[in-house]
Image (cartoon, rainbow, N blue to C red; front, side, top):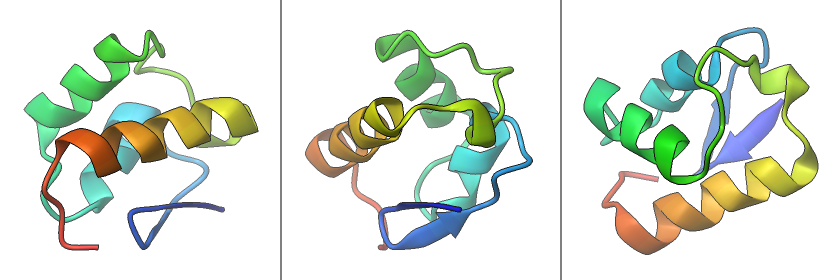
Length: 68
């Protein structure tokens, strides 16, 4: 299970949907993050590499205000 911004996001969901489990990330911001990092939004979290999860974590920490 991937942990981003203090939230365990579900591994069997698509990245676009899973990012929305983080308080402060909605559909528009989730799409913005996946486009910025060039990650296909239809990919599943379980298919992401450790490097891609790290990139998502760093992008959220640097550019978005979230609860976690």
